[in-house]
Amino acid sequence: MDNDYPPFVMEQVASFYHKLQRKKMDYSVVEGLKKNIAKFPDVPEFKNYLAAAYDKMNKHEQRDTVLIQMLQEHPDYVFGVLQNAEFFLQNDELAKAQEIYNDSESISELFPKRKIFHVNEIIAYYSVLTKIKAMEENWGDAGAIINMLESEIDGVDDEVSDLRRFLMLQKLKSSINDDLDVDDWDDLLDFDEGIEPQVIKELPETTDSLPPDFVNPFVHELYEQDDVVSSELVQKILSSDRTTIIQDLVKVLEDTEKRMDVFFENIDGDEDLIFINTLILLKELKAEEALEDVLERFRNNGEYFEFWAENEMRFLWMVIFELGKNKIQVLADFLKEPGVFSWFKNSVSEALSQLYQHYPEKRLQIKLVWKDLLQLMVDATPEDNIISSVFIASLIGDIYDAKSEDYLPLIEELYDNDRVDLILFGDYISFLEDYENPVEENVLSLEEIQEIGFR
Image (cartoon, rainbow, N blue to C red):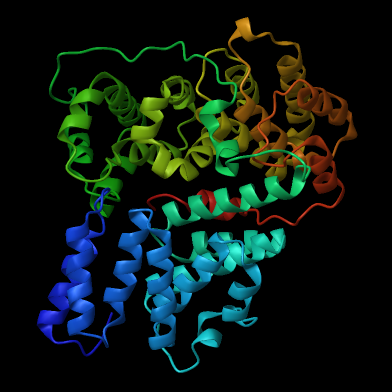
């Protein structure tokens, strides 16, 4: 961000910023920041970083002292003001955070002297505003802000994920009886503590260190893309012989399984996008014949999901939506399979829900699939290796828009049998309240879904 700091001060600011990215914090960072605060009292960043360092060291009393000092001395420092609001929310002092925000609905209202804001300031402002709305139990506004951030600002996946988690946690707190003894509310959002099937498929082993041979040699260029596939490579792929290019892209997907260890050891960035890029290319080609090959990758375990798909999972259902729109029964059969990782199933289930919303002629078939799935989850035993509390909660959420009372007895039975993760709706009473008083959701249009890709 633009400021009038001398270069040597900016070097110090940048240096301490990078030091704060360490997982562990030590007193050498704290002492260095204290010296800079004494030397440069008009630079609020150092106070901001000192508070963050104390927070990482769980020195909350010292952190709070620095935050209060920063607000008093630098009332127009955006991050200082917002961190104080965050500090009050962490201590359940909602009224004080509301006082800081002063009913503002945009960052320019809170800081009227500023005309231009850095994107990180905007993200921070709306993140805290989302939490305020959530703690006010204003679920609709909180959800709308999260959707706005996700659609309007690139690179906010982690922030959006954290905010959705915060919103779910607040809904959960409001839905459970006050007399319930809960030591750590965040534990209730730990997906690993729910019922999760044991994944059957094992990753194949190979000694190959190189990608496979392709009919279209330029497919090798996919392995060299740092981020989004170049427009030149996209045009090559989309204009190639359909049969051979789809075969080659399926080989790439198979390679993400066979040589996953090689990818993991040689990755030179935070993530490798070859998996999701290949899926989107198949979506662009409308390669319905590749659906089974894609679903075969979805049978892999949580380690595979976390490495290849977790950070880009918002695209998974769109791929299944395109490839599976004429193969509803194939999707249904996949959702009935035992030993499949929940979050892969969730993406397929979401695709079904979107197909229900966009293709009225498919609704009867999809409603029968939903009813069949719910009955399967009611009747299944732990030995069947199919029960997943996270998937069941996701399934209930996906059929929520159908508003068919035929589902309610089955859903209630699943809640009674403790087979539903409480993260989405809370308990059954809360689900009924949401069911009877639905919040309007933002649904992508068919055109928007089809446009997401590389064209």
